[in-house]
Image (cartoon, rainbow, N blue to C red; front, side):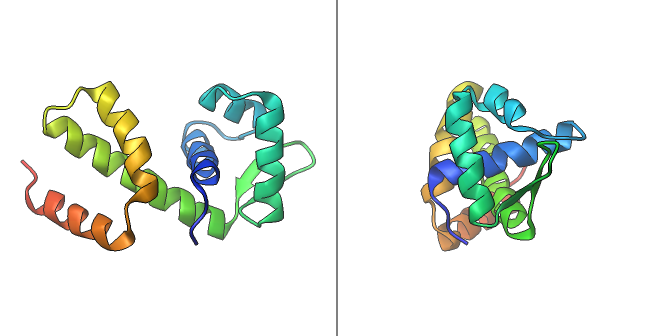
Amino acid sequence: MHKNESAENYLEAILMLSKEQLEVRSIDVVNELGFKKSSVSVAMKKLRESGEIEMGPDGHITLTDSGLAIAEKILERHELISSWLERLGVDPETAVEDACGIEHVISAESFEAVKKYILAHQD
């Protein structure tokens, strides 16, 4: 299930957008991530070919089961790590930026240990 960081970012963005609006298109991803249309187009093609997304004739992007699993994993990591860093006193903007890096490189074992610790020590 491991994807590269770029693919994980795209899948996470699609998931976040799908929670905010009924339909997600490539232009929404462009606006969310601030990337060039051409870069997003190439990424969407790769995600389609690897089976993480489906794209309808109208351009509507849907996460497949495997794409959704990856996106949910990354989003959970992002939200948990950024909120934990904020509780430790890190500026919210810095916490979000740092979580974006950490969420892709932390092992499943380490994340589960951190998650268990955080949940056991919530205020």
